[in-house]
Length: 141
Image (tube, rainbow, N blue to C red; front, top):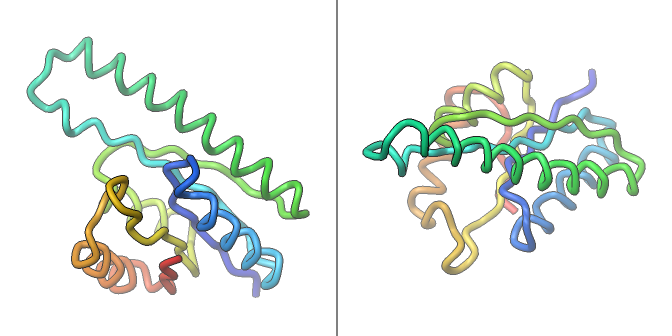
């Protein structure tokens, strides 16, 4: 049975190693691969709505660009990858996407200095939540 890998990515240099690992896993296992970008504008909760909509559309454009780059890297390695953008809080949207996509594996990057979304403690709490709520194997790269 073919598995399904979901690779959460923000794009950029810090995500490259995570994306490459997900691509290699998909190729090795013969699994389907989806790169996921979550646009989280919750930091704008107290700002006027028109600004939030504008920022969200900009995040979508940036996300699509990052996902297209990851998809191109996969294609160069002989792997067909799908892309998905979600809106909301990363933790909840990652769980929803993993369920919706039928993920058997979830690939996450480990915290990298000041660009990290999570510190180590929060990351491992997220991993535990993902495993418990999705049943998927979670790999931290």
